[in-house]
Image (tube, each protein chain N blue to C red):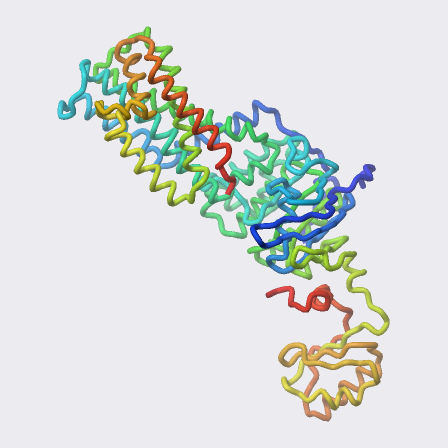
Length: 252
Length: 309
């Protein structure tokens, strides 16, 4: 028989401090992503390889300066990889393993459950962009400093929009289906969604992928504010996906 | 004991339907603070649905539920309760100790996670990813997550499912310690011995309804003529001769294959009659016991069904 000193479990309930909870949750989310080999392949290795390939090999037509255009597009791809595909797959399996139920039974407020995931995703995106930017600078990318604030804002907006889309997909379907769909959509957006190539078909410009790539190209290459059109497209997708996701996301 | 007379859990007229199936059908229960209440019933009786409504995971279709006087699932309530959902829960890739630290960070005055990991025998698995823990280890981690925040009330949904006997014993000891320290515990189980050993009050539910409630002693209380003599012998003995030899009012049946039960007022004369009858049959009465009814008998009597299907 195991005995416990009297008073060991005397109730002393209470919620932890909000900053501490947010930090612990965001740290966990980021750490688990960075520890996952498949996620690293998808979010870091493939974008790095494509950045080098697009910059150095003139097989795919790309506007000059070539390295700058490639950098903008690969930034967009990196955001789609982690905020959308990675987030959707992680969420699908987190639900399977009951972690959302576990955490929503703790003192963690519901809004913090979302905020923690968003902050975790932003940390991962920041690390991806830093690695890609250093590689791009080595390849000859000239960062126009005037574009830096726009670049940062677009990266945050892109992460939120694609994060909302990722939650919409990962929060409602079975984990295996999420895994398959999230990877297929990633590939389709890369090839014909206005990311790797500029597709001159009208409706492609209404895709969040094309909008993000185009907006990033403006600030990364030319150092100017992105056009209102692409930003509006991104915001619209984000708002609609977020509103839908709050209704469709299930804990298990 | 808590000076607060408010019930820990108060459920009245609770109804929950899934499509055309009524999972919980007008259920009432009251749990006094500082007590252990067991919801006992077979699989599909509505235990988990009831507990999940109390925890705030599901909404009721009808009736009212108050937990520590508050709305289930409310932000003011959740820090005060500990929840062990059925089947546990954790990030697939998180290590056991990391998961517990994360839940500890959500509490104002958590227990020491390292101590709790050791107490629950998870020391060797502290750095194992959640998805590679055995079912019993996931259950123990889930229990640790329920207790870490020093709650006033703990919900344990099938807490010993998938556990080996030692771990099960440990959970029983923990529940005893929680009660000793004034924590209210609401647990579900389909194990009679668990309910009998742990609970101050047992609520037996079947098909979403309360079929009986009371302390284990009350539920199994013996009227003077409500005792059992059990013994084992060769299967298929003709019990009509024994029936004839016994005083009026005593019933004999072969309850299970080779397991005989005599019900009624069991006195030394009855025991003697049974053993001499066995001697006449040329059989040895093994495992002969005189016992009060078990919760399983109570359940069988009330519902006509075995508790463990």
